[in-house]
Length: 95
Image 1 (tube, helix red, strand yellow):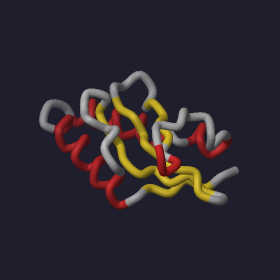
Image 2: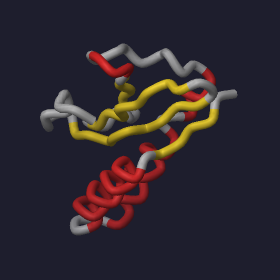
Image 3: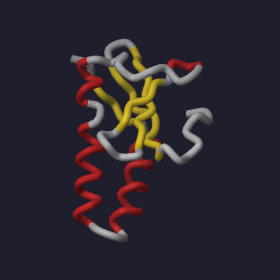
Image 4: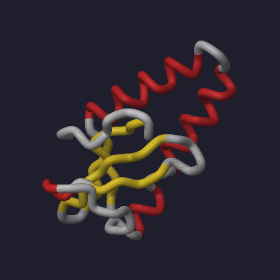
């Protein structure tokens, strides 16, 4: 199984997303957190499952049924989650 590593920027994205939802509901924020943290579990088994989205080896993977994407790269024996982006954001800019 491939190891999953979260970049500092992805962790900052997680904090920002949860902070936004916590303003409305801590319960909702908790459910979103669990969905985000669980999203790369499949990628640990199948790292190249997400489609490539441009140069630099960047790939995307949906976070369950949420309008969020994990942007990640496959590196040797690990998956690096680079960012967590809302689908409405310009997630195609350099990460």
